[in-house]
Every structure is written in C-alpha cells, then in structure tokens.
Image: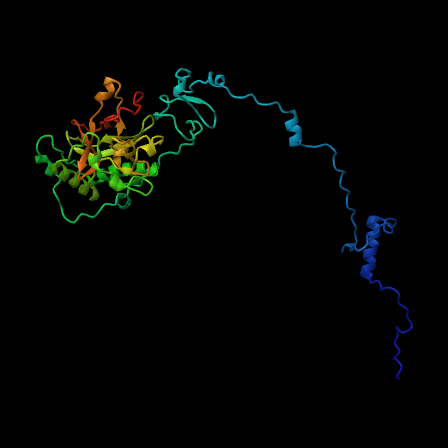
Amino acid sequence: MSKPKKTQYNNLQISRPIASPIRRNHQRNREICFGSSLLPTMRLAEGQAVPSNGCVRKRTAAPPPSSERKHKSMEDIMRTAKPALPLTEDYYLDVLCQQCRLGEEEDKIILCDRCDMGYHLYCLRPIVPRVPTGTWFCPSCNDAKTVRTFPLMQKSIANFFRIRRKRRRRSVFLGSQKKKRRLVTFSPSKDPNQRLVQMASLATALTSLKMEFSNDLTYFPGMAPSSANAAILEKGGMQVLAREDKETVELCRSMYMRGECPPLVVVFDSCEGFTVHADEDIKDMTFISEYTGDVDYLKKREHDDCDSMMTLLLTTNPFHSLVICPDKRGNIARFISGINNHTPEGMKKQNIKCVRYDVDGRCRVLLVACRDISRGERLYYDYNGYEQEYPTEYFL
C-alpha cells in the first residue's frame, strides 16, 4: 500500500477552526461593545439557535394573572338584582300625546313599539284611521325614506303601464253625444309631455308603496275565486250598467292602454300622504277610473291594516261578501282622498262618486265625477257610501 504524500500541513494538529482575520476582528468588536466579562455568562437554552449577529436577548417574563374579576358573573347579578314591578293600568295613566301634549281620549292613543311614546290617532300625519294590529313605530322612530321620483322617460313609463303602440288614430270624443246623465269619456291632455308627467307621478306613488299597476280585478289562489264575484248574490240587487255606459268604460280602458290617461296627477302631501289632483278641467259624469286590486272575502280582511279596501259585493251571508284590496296591485283610484262625512264642510268637498255596477254578471266599482271639477282641484269621494263603518271623523 502506498503511503500518503507528505504536505506542509501533515504535522499540524487542528482542534478548532482557524479564525480568519475577519472573524478575529468580529470577536474583538463584540468584546469592545459588550465587555469580555459578559461573554462567558451568556448561556443558550437547549436547542436554541445562536443569532447570526452573535447577540442573545433574554425574554421578559409575563406578569402574574390578576386575582380580581373584571366582570361579575350572571349568578351574582341575578342574586343581587331587585325584581321588576308588574305593569298595571296605572302605568299608562300619565301617557301624553307627543303632538298635542294632552292625555284625553286614552282609547285613541297608540304607543310606539320602540320608544313607548304615545300619539293620538288623529294627531298623526297622515292620520291613522284605526289601531294597527302589528308592530307600529312613531314618526321619530320610523326611518321614513324620501319618495323616489319615477324616471321621466317615455320608454320606462310605457313599460310600467304596459302601453301598446297605437296603429291608427281614433276619436276620443265619442261620449260627447251621449244622452243626459250617461257616462262621458275623459279628455286626455293634448300635450304628450304633460301626459308623461301625469303617468310618472302615478308610477312614483305605486313604486313607493311597492305596488304593481293593474287596471283589472285580480284573483289569486288563497283568496276569493272569480266565480265568487256574482252580481246576482248582491243583497237587494245591483244596478246593471247600460250598454252605452259599458262602451264608454271600454273605450276609456283602450285609451289608457294607448297611453292616453285621464288628466290627473298624483301629489304627495306631508299631512295626508298621496293625493290626486285634476290637471285639466273635468266635466260632470266623466268616467275617472275603475277601482281595481286583489279580490278577497271580507271575513278574511276584517283585521287587515290596509286603509283603502273597497266593498265589491254585499251578500246576505257575510262569509260570501267581497272586498277589493289594493295593497299589492291597483291604479290611481287607490290614492283618491276620502271626505269627512261627519261635517258639512267635509261633504262639500266631494266631487267624485263611487258606484257599484253589474257588468256582464260581475260586480265592478266605477268612480265618476259628480260635478264639474276645475284644474288644480283635489279629488274626493265618500268612503262610507254603503256601510258607514269607515272612521272618517278625523279626516281633514
């Protein structure tokens, strides 16, 4: 076996790495910064790596946990809590109306379900006709949103009211030669931009109440079927709409589908809500609109909060009587105001009459002008034309 070749390093016994000049300078700098006496005392824990800079920092010890509790337990709170006093009728004796600051007529005061403040039904604006059955919030707690105006665009309005494109020009003055006391067709505004504003105002009111436009009575599952609407069941009989008047109503409906609406504009009033005003002069016996909406049984809607229900059919059996509920679908008739039929001044405001007719065996409700209406005049009719049950004594 050949011997290993001798080199100049064969006689050296190396027990540690040879410190280079740079390493020796680094060691000297550490001794200068920290002191040579501190270096031997810096021990590393088992498995702890040495930092690259050679320095070892001690970890500060966490303070011992405090023996005091920050919060009381639920058991301690319930042990020391005093029992609440039960509410009695005397608790509400000092409730005052926040509007008039009076506590009279306690049966007319309703309490807010959030702040527990009281208000008279007739002091609220708009007036609340009856005590709400569900949750009710006062004007201060109710975050009422501003009415969002419907866009004044012809295409948007035409799609909203499902207006058909007219193919040929038809005369709109066929009702002018009707016999006396016959229904007369309305005369739409001649300016198309004015008609656009009128329909936009109605679309604004409907969308603000999350309603759909409908010029027909609607029947849905779970409500009264269409077969229940039989005029022959009316207690005491119902007057039949004459053939000439039926033609007038159908003509007005076809005009509406072409975008020729009655000269009416819906205006929002801070005290009474949405109201309807005449945008042109309207003659006596002019057909205004048909009252439309969902048809349902009266017994199902006795405790309904809808303030615009209209009687459609009154039968000898109260379980077969029908009402029109324009809470989800309806037209401009939904926003016509009611008179205070308890005062002579209120009854003088009436310029619209509500009449129920037998049309082809079905009950329908028509709104007709009962006198000449001037431009700018607000439309009113009597809510209690048949039953005298609607509370109108606080109407303005």
